[in-house]
Image (cartoon, rainbow, N blue to C red; front, side, top):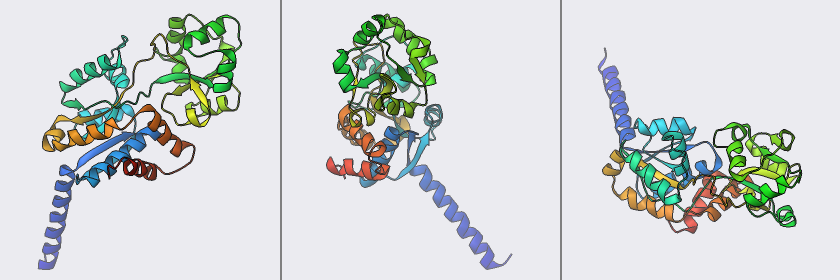
Length: 295
């Protein structure tokens, strides 16, 4: 083999080794595959990069895949919801307050090397919503009010996705908890995104929504109060691998600062900028960080 060929091979090997080392030293920030999570992934990556952290971003994953990746050490940091961790990961279904749920998942996940940092004020839980005008007209403020209306014979139509209609902690137990039942004809099953449009266009009276979805304020919906606390709290929280935090302890204060600035109102506004105003994920995330003086 010629000397030049040997040198090229050696150089290539060095480059590969260097890339592998850089990748190993990067903080891998993951995220799920819907608007809110894509915003958080971009926001976190831009924020930490500005603070001098070498970040490798991997967004657009499903919940189960992302959780497994973090447990296996392939993802260092991502934002998770307490309700998801309780129900999906730890199979705990008994009602808990925000603080109880947070402390429970924090304790359980610490045993497998996952550290829950400070929870934000974002609670992206399931909810039922109505158009503000109709809810006011019918005097429906809470889910108990909705129950009374249905039991009194008000022919209200509900839009929800197939998963919520069928899941063990979805529509059926909700109706049982509040003592009412939609007839089969009153339930319109459709893709999640279409439920918002169906409600907006007056094809239905009630819709399943996610509490921080930007279309709720944009379309002038009102979320019905869950006065019996049926839905679990889904407090949005940064979760990091213990090894990654030990390697860079400054991440705790940085992420807790970012978490403290997020709440239901501004998260819904950020989601709306993407889903309603059609701004890019990167631009909206950067704009928030700049407004908060974080970059």
